[in-house]
Length: 254
Image 1 (cartoon, helix red, strand yellow):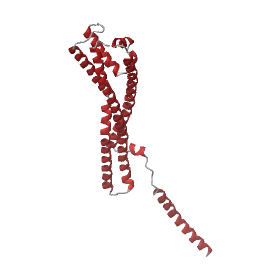
Image 2 (cartoon, helix red, strand yellow):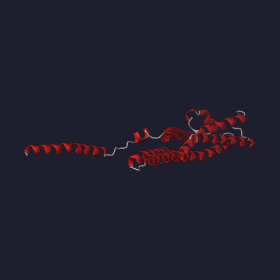
Image 3 (spheres, helix red, strand yellow):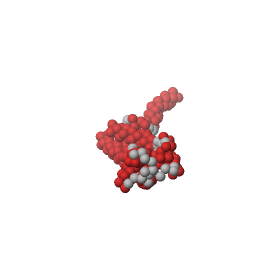
Image 4 (cartoon, helix red, strand yellow):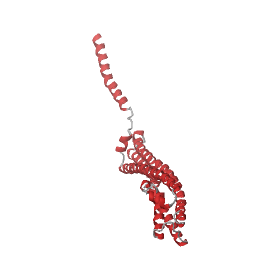
């Protein structure tokens, strides 16, 4: 009896071990895998990868333009402030020109002044203090205002690229999102299953494309609005400065 009981117990134990092992494997296999965004991007479909690459390139270009344009406007404002102080304290245009403009290379005002002064000297044939007639004064005014317009265009350079990135990046990211969701539904149809392991990776990679599009677009729009306001402020002052130079040139540069 004892032997039979021991044999029965051993048989039950042996039969339970595979079941326990299978239950352990099922539990372990039932543990959800953690989705890694980097792995999702690497294993994304080709169209989504292209969208992400385009948006990453847009983001890099955006920040390069922001840094370059910020330094450009910072130097322009600094040199312009120093030049305007020299312009206001100079007794005449000849006195200011004799000081040299090499220290104001970043100032658009200095280039406007140089254009108007050179034209005044040409029309007066080098005669200092000679007043210009109406036709000559109108010509100098036209020259200085044209120079101011050219400086404004120069200050606005590359800003159109920021505007383009800011307006198109969200739509490019949206295209990646739509394609990713469409791919997710195709996977559901092909596998006849709507389980999260089937749908989640596709939707996640689609939303990553949208996020990168916003990361590229938001700084572009903010920087574009900031730079546009700064350039607009300088443009108003430059237009008035061009008229000031022309009026002083008409009086012989006093």
